[in-house]
Image (cartoon, rainbow, N blue to C red):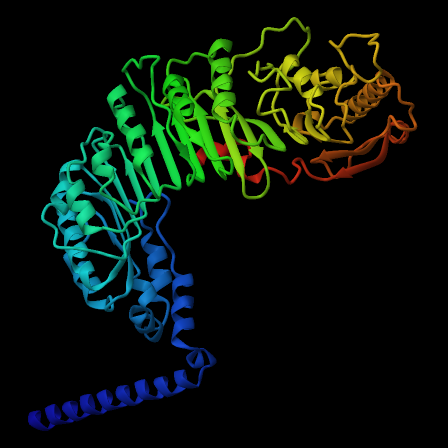
Length: 566
């Protein structure tokens, strides 16, 4: 009886197993009939990637519930397709806690001659072993880019005696977590990556020029967060710039230095005809001035960024004026820009709150741009009742290189009156955009000619903004009061009438400008009918937009501008 019961149970188990297999077969048949199963595997793998939830911005945090939702909730069919898709293995991530099983899986899945990007973040000695193992396997792949973030000792251990010669590697990024590391493996790096075009070094001492020149094809070079800078290091940088034949992009960032740099003589470099993009950032204006004074840039440089920092917190007019003079001297060989943005941002100066930087964003066309950032002092003024601190900008002459050929300017900051006087004297300026922050502000005073002499023997010589034909006025959140907006518009109309009278022009008539455009964040502008009529007497066209910012200078706008350069 007992044996018969066991046999019956065994038969039932076999029947259940058979039915389960039949059920799986039916499910597979059903899945093959689904529209999604008829999609190409390449498309299915991309859908899988789009369904994934990635890490938080803080790389150390992973949400387990998100991982379960993103991976386990999709079908086995999708996972199988994704694991066989080359795109999944294009980027190999290595960290301090990366498991050997993951490395084995990656080594197994990457196809022969496949393009691979290797990223190693906060790699410790154990992670360094994994990074070395992946790099050595790169002999049968095409390692397009290698990024390593580790201590100097770990990076040296990774590349010491590395059996690799990757002909197709285009970029190498090495960050030293010690912030004082000496890069002593340049021979190994140049041997492993003989044709790299982009080299990014962060937190290292300045390499010797002879070490950098081993990368014979180098076109894009960045020295970021240089831990120590000496006069000898600066000489090495000059030597490298002089001898680097293919260099098109050069970026240098020096947070601070304790060394004294003599006034000279410093070498003057030959024309850097191939350099199209240049970025120099230093909290020591002396270093920036020495570099700019030595560089002989090509007239068609496309992108340039200069940050005049403030290591000691100095905001004296003398310091900012020296920065402006250096800039005028360095760029004298290039054509002055047509458009300019004046804004402000907070820089990362290592303090609890960084210094406020004034940003000058110059633009020739959509391709050529110039970003200049500097710390400037608050202005000493005698005006009573100002609701905003004004700033003394170092450009106070319409013949300054930065201002000399301007056709349009947008001022999203609060310069003192001497800057506006300089703007009013630019003979080519046709369009201006300003923030309305207070009645009888510096702009309306400059527009009506305050500070200019009266009774000139030649009519028109004292006309402020002689070529002006368009004004944009931006009402910000603190200037949305209807009474203020109408009052400011009336002040603007009065200033335009005074300006026309200075030039001997009638209003209505030749003294009118073409366009007045008001930007307001509210649902409606709130300009009264009598004010609108008054505006139409000084401008041929009066417009309003529900916006707070004209669509200009996206490359250098407010606080986002410094993110690229720090």
